[in-house]
Length: 148
Image (cartoon, rainbow, N blue to C red; front, side):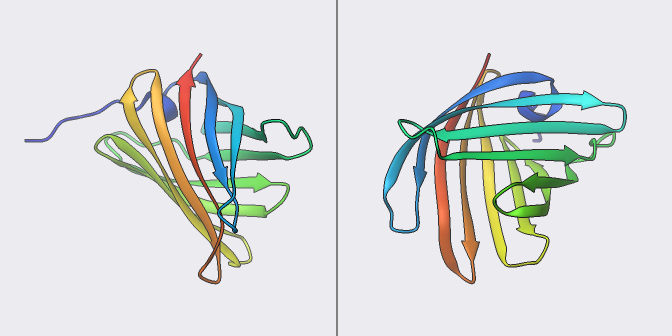
């Protein structure tokens, strides 16, 4: 039996509030908060995300994704992004049951990562991910995204 799940995070235009933790290479844990905006243009979906270390306004992570819209009945699509700290990245989103899985790497291939967005309900996703370089963890995160 197959069930179709509608992913409000990627498929709808919404603003999301993020909160959770960021873990650095030394396994130090920092609280984070931020926002993500998803909007659709003709032939392109945009995701703009910002995450900040709570209590240290100097540390901020930003990313702007340009996503190829999913075709009718498709469960995978590609994206490109720009992150000021990492440069250009390319990846894909794959819809798998209650999750949106993203695999990616930097343009130069130095860094790779993966993350998933698990649908809890239409207004809440759990996001978990990691970034690696040469088999070493650069960072990881555990965040909740709540639709505003």
